[in-house]
Length: 287
Image (cartoon, rainbow, N blue to C red):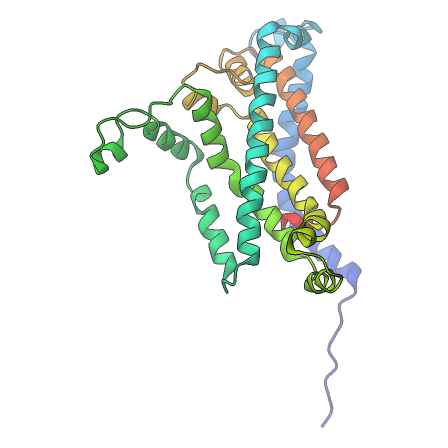
């Protein structure tokens, strides 16, 4: 009986098929990501009311917004909240990821799904739900019969809790993925060399999981740095971040100044992505 030989598809043909499948995504990317960025770069160097081409003149005065006191304060506020939130997420994210990694649960990815399950709901709904909980009279006070609940809306604590609650899963996922990719034989080798559990963690496990920490830090830092919904809703308008100034600029039709700030944030984001690619060239911690 004659055996049928399996046809092996050359790698270049596989790559060609994948390129064809990626074309719709590339078209979508060019229209809804690259084209708006080009428009904003153009608006940075012109002066106009709204987007009226007949009264448009070349100008670099839009860059003066970068030196305004309100912008500087908002930028430092954004930096403060994003850095502190990232540090908190690193601590709790690593604790959760490592505990899950060392646990004997068979279906660990089910736990991860439960962790990221709230992210499947609308972002603004989650923020507004937190805002209602942070007010004195809310659903929790009604259920448990408490006379007065939390009253932290409009405070720093409310913003930190909102950011950590929202972005903690972005830290847990890459750290857990990096831990799962550590060769189990390294654990046995460390113990054979006489290391204690703490030394094994500090000398072997933690250095090998730093890729996940870096990737998770970028994934938490950037949305905290550029976001505006959390400080607007949970901060009750008392605290202004750079994202709030960008939103206010576009809402008041100051597209030129808003574009300047948006492009600055975009440059920071692109630089952070390059950092992640340099640290984790294979993108293994994001899978």
